[in-house]
Amino acid sequence: MLSVPTCPQLLYDSPKARQEVDHHWQTSGGPHIVRILDVYENMHHGKRCLLIVMECMEGGELFSRIQERGDQAFTEREAAEIMRDIGTAIQFLHSQNIAHRDVKPENLLYTSKEKDAVLKLTDFGFAKETTQNALQTPCYTPYYVAPEVLGPEKYDKSCDMWSLGVIMYILLCGFPPFYSNTGQAISPGMKRRIRLGQYGFPNPEWSEVSEDAKQLIRLLLKTDPTERLTITQFMNHPWINQSMVVPQTPLHTARVLQEDRDHWDEVKEEMTSALATMRVDYDQVQIKDLKTSNNRLLNKRRKKQADGSSASQGCNNQ
Image (tube, rainbow, N blue to C red; front, side, top):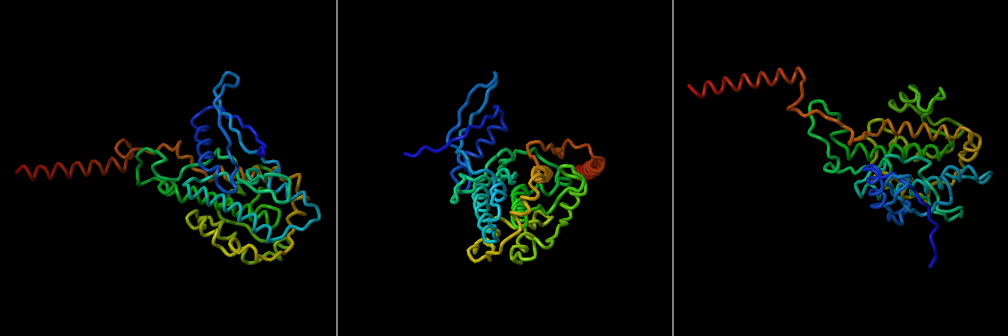
């Protein structure tokens, strides 16, 4: 029997840590998802902790692997095959009613350094169940609640689709669609560009990339979360489900990633910050109960209804 290389991860015990382990354990048998082999409760520095034993991902991060290719061409067909693998992982999660909400480069790892290594998704620290009854939010005031809170399933899953769009964009050219001009992790200008969907396909990096690929990115980076592709639509797109006929066009990606190696940590930090702005932590949401709300307009309506009710009762008593 072959032994599987393992890597332990330590989390201090808390409801959030247990939720992370639960979501990862529930999906760890899925395709292109890092497997959890065992979980132990223990003590560490006098605190209760969880020791998670996972398969060891010895191949490193997705974009580091492309950086290390040197002069070997990275093609559009290879990018399509990678996106199909990532999409397969997201499709499995969404089928289990779980949104990952933190799909980013450092959470995409290869099993080994070998050519046939498998790319897998890890880190379920921000994962959420997307069924309404799992959110356990208090009764809300329907006049003012944001549409994202009313429709968490669509909103949370669409966050993963936006991430797929950003990762696909970087795979095809080597730099992100949205970036900060100020050196900050996420500047006001970058936030505005994300909100308005301001990005382009500049030459020379994009001059030979297929129109199918550009169209798919446009559908993933829609500013309105409800307009983005679902994972099923993504997996059915010709660029994904017919990846074997995607052109083997050599891309600029490896060269750009090598040239910008010193700035790669900043790119990852920007994506982390951007994802944080898109997440709604429903467990922290405190929505006012309609009965206890002290809103002036609602108070006025209550008084009017009460007066009307009193008048009606007066008529009935005559």
